[in-house]
Image 1 (cartoon, rainbow, N blue to C red):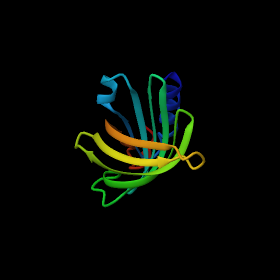
Image 2 (image 1 turned 30 degrees about the vertical axis):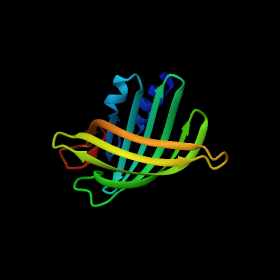
Image 3 (image 1 turned 60 degrees about the vertical axis):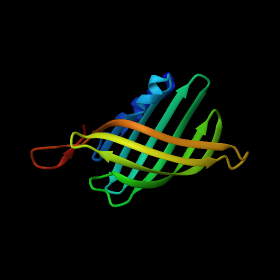
Length: 150
């Protein structure tokens, strides 16, 4: 679990440039003893790159996904599809995902998603489920109107 936290903090530091960033977690899973975290970087209006991880007991997983948002109301929200690379307990695979993200006026994010993947070498099943709640950090503007890091 400590390894996931360090990776998460390093990625959060790297992605503090000129795009929007979201930090999310699954509150229900945390109540049941599963640590989850997610960091999504949105370089454009319709695309997002996400690092997602979880750990519980002897099971842990890490996913790297790319998302395409259809008709976003704001940057990186609404219905989305994408693909992911993932590993669960040393079984790696590739898959697809589908989901929906809501964004409140106060920058609170709620996301539902699911997907399925497969290990191309061994044929193992790789699940992808999201029920996340989080916060969107927006880049700050300087007095001259240009964007700066967080």
